[in-house]
Length: 315
Image 1: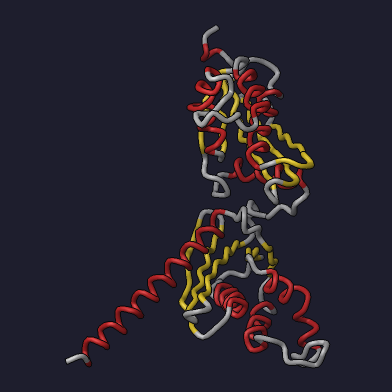
Image 2 (image 1 turned 90 degrees about the vertical axis):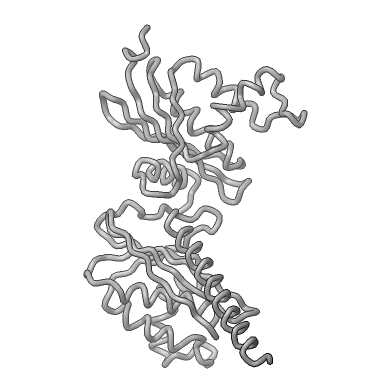
């Protein structure tokens, strides 16, 4: 049979596990050339992220009703490299690595290898947690299957703000960055901070990011700080009612920053989401990397200025 005469199918597969190893889930989006799009997902009690990535691809291929011409998109280099480069060597060596150790996840690799005999498959790597809506949906299915709250990354009616901060306690220098996204539009803002703390920067950066908004739209704000999320959604009302004192009668830490944020939140519809540091959304990771880069550049410039000052006074 001519390959081009086979029915064409596009598959997006993804796996999720947290902690790793721990409870896992897998998901797949199946888009046939003719017919309706389908979604699959499943849960495993104790597993690893790599096993879930393999399971997602395997179950998606198993679900196809007939021999097909498949484009399979995965954000796992482990899966892509294993299938396209390593598996032939493993097969010849009796499923032993070049280090003479048993191949991990052999059961799934063998099952996937056998399934590939039924189809013509082209493997395509796609960047995970980025802007590919089908990859994001496969991730949502995997995450939901293992029981974690799904982030509303595909909500096009809202503005999405991804926060990243870094704080160097020893040097007393930090920085923050925010990636703001509305549909296909992106904006990056940020600043360096001194004489502060990690908690304070989380509050200040969220305030500044929200202040830049020019449109009255719902906002999803993604942060790694449970302190910021709990403060803004659970503690703030009580602090205001109690005159910015805790239940124990002590002054609320960072009360000035909380008051400013409170004023901004009164005018903006914001939903706070705490991300998993081990598997952050792409823009959250980008914001973090930008913040780290800025604080390193700030420290370098500060060191250079200090060196110049020393040179000036040395005869």
